[in-house]
Length: 271
Length: 281
Image 1: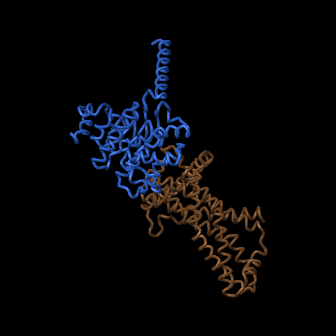
Image 2: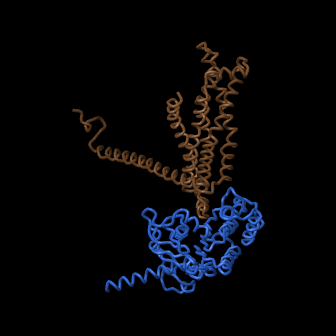
Image 3: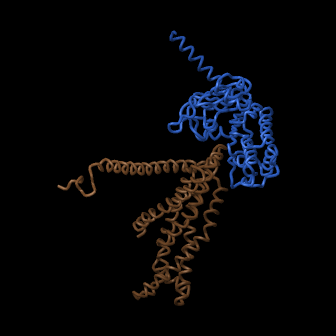
């Protein structure tokens, strides 16, 4: 290849990159883009060059065996952990090289539901949901109260405003956690096993809520789950992680039909 | 020549075992030393993050007021009780000794000087490091292992400011006030104990007690407890926020918060007493 060709190719790649970045920033492009993501804990390699893209208004389900770094992936996206290498762009903004203030601004656009809800145990249900509203909005007390009731009503917890987290069951805690994650009307939702430990009816309600958010508010979601039934309902695309890598990516139906031995093993239990 | 190999009960076969034991002891010593340095390094990073967060808005006034109540108001009864006990014990013990030397009239001054200069500040520091240090270590430790600190961070709020700085500042502000309360209770109960043995008016007791003391005698020892507050708040918050390993880890954080903050309070006391003697002779 001639030197001039190389330069032209680089310029084309660079302008393509800039165009993608511009589209991401303006909200037209993907909500989350992960490139070459590596993460190790000591000698244990958890993520080994992950590449993923989640479009606005799309839901990606992340499947995989326990300990394959699914939760770590979510924590990397929201900047709770730093990757060893690779790039994480959220709405076009690179989070790995961003300063603390910029990371906090990005975090306000992301709702995070933790695996065990992580409700603040010294605050009531209403105060838990009010926490992000009190800090990041200028709502009056009455507006805040209305918003809290609206959010808790959406997850079926409107009657438990003054309860403490210790008075709630695991499923109820998760629903309050989801209401808190939705408080700032995020453009991206990161859900760590949202239906784990829930009864089938509550699981279905959570799934329906995620679908509603996707349709009405164009929210992009990344859902880490072991619940294949839930993944089938909510996810536009599904990825399967194994040994730090994406083994396969596609629709649920495509993955179900895969001939790959590991993929087939994974889906065998529900078939 | 006295060869070890010929010593009673010692054979050449024991030599490798002895070398292995020495090596193991040295390795263990090195690990301890390394762990010690690592702890200080992490503490330095933690302090830097707290300082950086502290100067940025918002200033978390609500949480600071909650912590002032938690550290201050709720510790007051215990500190008052400890101060009273010291006053009573000092009066009873010192009275006996001073009578032997024929210096009974010095009793009010001995009680007041001892409480204000040393026992009041140190006992307040140690009582608070037990009550508040354990509380902060356990509370933040529990928040860490249940991912509540991660949840705070994920919602765009700096946990170093919300959780650590407010607790450290509350300890710094409250310790001198609690020391005043301990001093007051100590002096009053010291007078009561003294007056039970031999009646003396409160006015006379106070007049005699404070006769040879200046404002500096009072100011420097009381405000050195602000340094104790800094130590207790920082060490307990640090131990809590680095907690790991479930409920067992929370227990370890609470214990280590008390042990380390008490240790550093005693060390700081020795250094600060020397500094006070230099700057306020």
